[in-house]
Length: 206
Image (cartoon, rainbow, N blue to C red; front, top):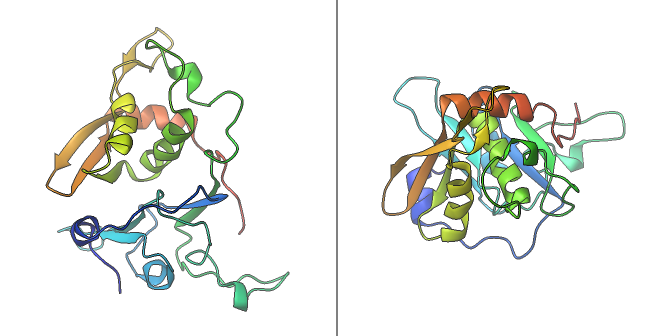
């Protein structure tokens, strides 16, 4: 059974012990909340973001807990060299090379940073930036200041937006409760991410 975002963060478990080679991310525009992925996830890191509008609910992966097993993407026991049995019927799941395992020499985000300092947590910024690119919002637990700090960097109004040198914030805090914070991409931030991320580190398997 799937679990709602509220219940998930009220009972959220610890992160995985080490970074994994792959990460799975769900594209909410393709997701129909059919629960296929959440049903097979061995670490229960997939939750549903409900909507009052019929057909607008979607699932999201807690990438800090994803172990990259790809079970939500395909069934290894039913796949062969020439045939792949996919779990998601809507092709809503992207598999990424985890940027935290083998970071690029220069982050794709680096050219857009115009604030002070250059030693930002680039790999984590890329990880969550991709989720914002796909879904426009990401939830993090209120107990994890290290994760909140990542979004604080994205929330600084120092990201290059135009050729004229205009800078914007990529995210803003949309809501907060006892267990979780929802960060949403700003309108300008979403446009910027749409320019940066298409095809980034995605593994095309279909």
